[in-house]
Length: 219
Length: 233
Image 1 (spheres, one colour):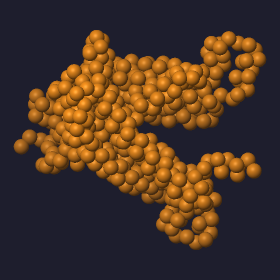
Image 2 (image 1 turned 90 degrees about the vertical axis):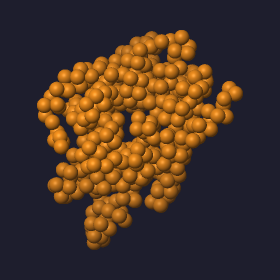
Image 3 (image 1 turned 180 degrees about the vertical axis):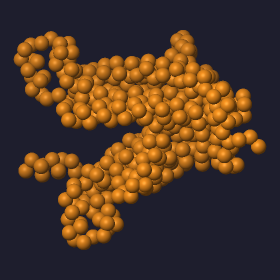
């Protein structure tokens, strides 16, 4: 009988898993950029309360939030080529993850914007600042730092959701673990290492976010 | 469009598995949330430590890894494999239970200290204090975050398609996409609508529970507003 855990085997597969981890991190970073920027755009647009546009954006946000990311990724993967847009699985992953999480971050930004005292808006209006300066010079510098911990938590969640993309054969950590275990018929080491890699990155990150949270409460 | 009835039929075929996985996952989540959440508040040091390890382990790793670990690795270690649907329920429950534990802990801690002191003064036992005074108030606070958590769980149930549970996503991607390629937009729109409807059901049930729980405390639903008025007055 082979041992439950084979260190030699574990070390031999580590380089491949680390390489895949790099892909996971790339998707997380790019997806976060999409989520952080698009979320902000959604929040600012909704704040303008333009009739019809506002309802459409609201419906889109609720719909995306209430349905599985996995199905949305499949949707992008299968439907986009039909309308002539051919994207790599990697790009589908970044867009899918980014748009899904943008609906969450938009709510976070909204809460941050709502928390800015009304007097700030009034002061900016009294100084007759142009609309764009009101946002970039007055409101957002106060709203965004406040919600950084919440945004950080969503980035960590995104990192942990990247493995969903194995469904469209993105070669990230879990997909690589799956490939290795089907080549060698030894699932224990690859999946356990995959889990540990996630824990190793997301646990320290969540401690950092918690520290940030405590500091922002103190302010 | 002429394939609509057949597409709907195949997708509806997947609904029972999605509903069973979600309900099973929710039941397990509730149990684990309370056990682990109250353990996090226990005076017993080892109990807190065990619960903390559980919570961080399941919050710190990806749900897909957990699913594959329980489905592919556990059989190697213990010698038998779980039925896919059951393995799915276990993973959904374990994963979301870890998040729920923090909800329970937070809600119990948010009950004003004076409530516990008053119960102590009335010589309630610690168990009575928890059951009669603290939990009824804490539960009202827990319901909105649990609503979000249960919708997350419903959405997560789609990953059960990875271990070939015949739920909605698996039906759509494995059965419909290869056979009705030209109706691809329709297929995915219907799938998303099914999940949206199930999410609305969860929200409706949770809103009702919120009203009932608030009513039992004499808060009559509009609890936040009532409390705000008390605070102002």
